[in-house]
Length: 109
Image (cartoon, rainbow, N blue to C red):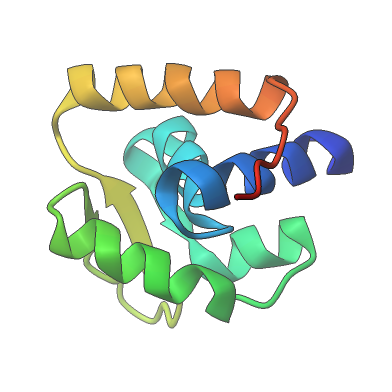
């Protein structure tokens, strides 16, 4: 994902989800399938601190939209995956992909 598309997605995420990084985290979850997402790996790929994803991930887990995967033996990294509601996540993935492609105009007042 280009930096320009990523920035559009972040701007839309603030407006739609109230958090700058929630939409890109959800898109990563939707795209990851069963292997899940490691927040550290995602952060490294997106050149941000992993901590920017902690709060949105907690909210997704609390809402039942994501879950922690069990750690494999000897693995320090924590992975998360989306819930088992495939129809919901297909809709979300479509919405998030469209948000990433749409120009965002900030409205004030």
